[in-house]
Amino acid sequence: MTGTLVRIQPHAFVFRSTAGTGILVHLGIDMVHLNGEGFEVLAAEGSVVQAGDPVVRYDPQVIAAHGYADICLVIILQSPPGAVSAPTTTTTVDAAELLFSWPS
Image (cartoon, rainbow, N blue to C red; front, top):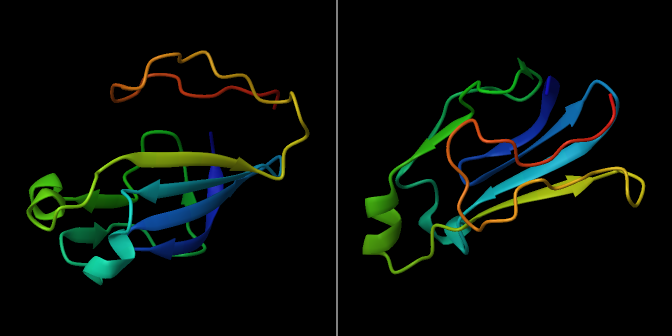
């Protein structure tokens, strides 16, 4: 998916596809309490990203050392009900594995 980063924090970012669908990616639970420790922002707000482009890098060991969970939430925004299918049925997703699909 190609889209524009509309908001980025060390622990979360939102981008909007060219079709208008928004996606929120939140790295971990309660990561805001780390104030960016263990995170490296790799892209800037307003930049155009494509599937596979790195946006944020984080160190799971830093997260674990603080007792937080490194669960990553991916939330679809601004999309009509039923427009997005989720072919992935497991709780673990490998790099480059299809997570969601929707019409262009």
